[in-house]
Length: 244
Image 1 (tube, rainbow, N blue to C red):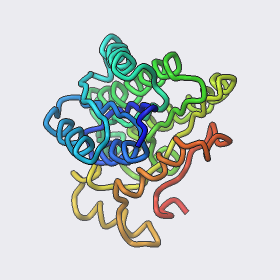
Image 2: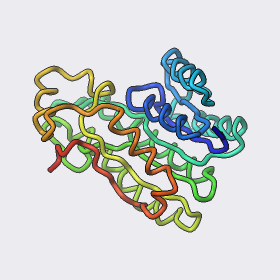
Image 3: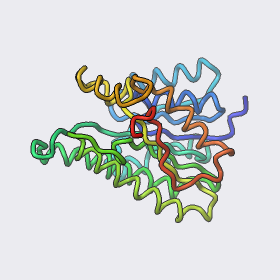
């Protein structure tokens, strides 16, 4: 398999992120598996990719730190020469009824889900090769907030708005900019929810189950492909019909 294209996935050591990394590697991409603190998990993703004949490296960065994000992109381009796909997947969960949300907890959500995503998307806009793909992993809760998700939903909806603007800004370079809105998915951030909450979200879907990272990775693969060259500025639901 020829590995002449490269991809960077933030949060690549997590549940959804790791499956995205492995899928893009199977598609022939050289992959930068970004991680925040879980070096072991990132190295396990890299090992699985390389043992399957792929090419991958792990790189740490605090997504809320401008210098570290710039260093992450610089290292990726130094290693692989260019970047064709960037998947902004790193995120934080949390929330509760708005009246109960502490300011510090809300600021953490804003720092990771808004500031972190902004820094990643901005650097991608500066670094992606012409004809590249920029993909943001959003949430169905950006579109359909539920009780107790207001703070989290706001952070995801904020970047979804940015996606539309960026699609116009980068279109002249042939770069597509889209977001995917998964439903409740495990393993991933949602895995820490209690069983009552999991059952609530299972019952929202006609399939009566939660999502799995393998439900999301193929959609990233499609948006990264030439077949998706005419899709930009869109928010693709991937929630098993839970928002219907």
